[in-house]
Image 1 (spheres, rainbow, N blue to C red):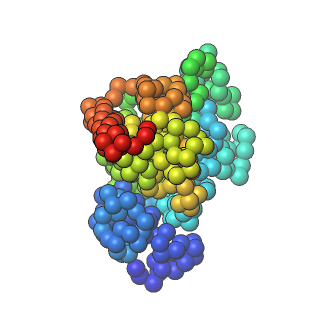
Image 2 (tube, protein in one colour):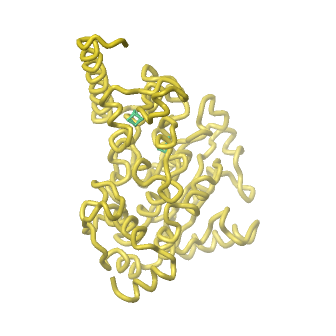
Image 3 (tube, rainbow, N blue to C red):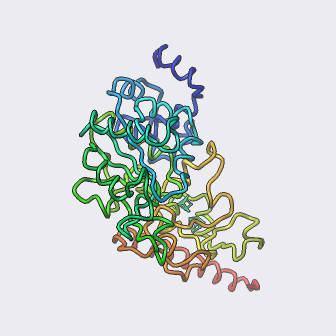
Length: 369
Ligand code: SF4
Ligand code: F3S
């Protein structure tokens, strides 16, 4: 790293480990050369590959033209905005955010009311065709959109207007991506995700409840540096962050393979950290990077804290088979790709085979069940 870059990191209170971690993520997201020692960064192998400190990422961000961003919030809890301000490495996410000019953000803007609405209008005119539009929250379509209005205009109207002039559209959080909690049955407001409404432009989905801040920041960084979107899966999620299931990266996976399952939240299995599959864990069919990036400065994520995955980065997660219903529950109510079905079936089959084999071993040894 150059002295300048070291100073910049120092100024932002970025530790070497934090820098390694986000740099690896961003490098992976941007398709830049990445680099070991993976262990030093705490990165998952598929994200970190090989990494050593270099100027490539910082230089790319420093020299990229500052990108104007308009961040709209509709039917949401502001949790995704909250998450990005309390991310694993706030200073590091700032490194990305500092390459942006946030022209409009309802929660973070100092201005309010007509003043900020006017600022947004001017920004959309000034940067027409150039700004990144980030959307948080679902869009109500019932009652002609009257369930959610800002400045007297419906969310539906505001989304279409902002999308028309956007260079890239990023839907952050499950609500903006797939409708989220507001879309749960009976969906009284007719809530929809952005990509159900904006169909003439690509929409990148960063689902989660909330979205992982590094996934949002990494996707924006990719667009800022390359002027192009990262590779996406069939649900428009960046493959870098959503290419593997939670189950693939789960630290309880060994117990799953060994057929050791917690059967209640306070049994011996739960206390020993066994697999939560029989308590309804949807990790096998949920694609997200939370098991490796985690939350609260890398402290934990739901499964590590003893809670089964609820599938918060998948469509219809709120209605998709119910929570805590064990392995017999239908997992995700959406068209599931062959690979996903295969992974789930193979995972379930592997667990069943191991469980059966263990049972057989016990039986042959004359152990009681
Ligand atoms: Fe982890 Fe859930 Fe998979 Fe068990 S079923 S290994 S708790 S992701
Ligand atoms: Fe969400 Fe499941 Fe991760 S509920 S945060 S995808 S463990």
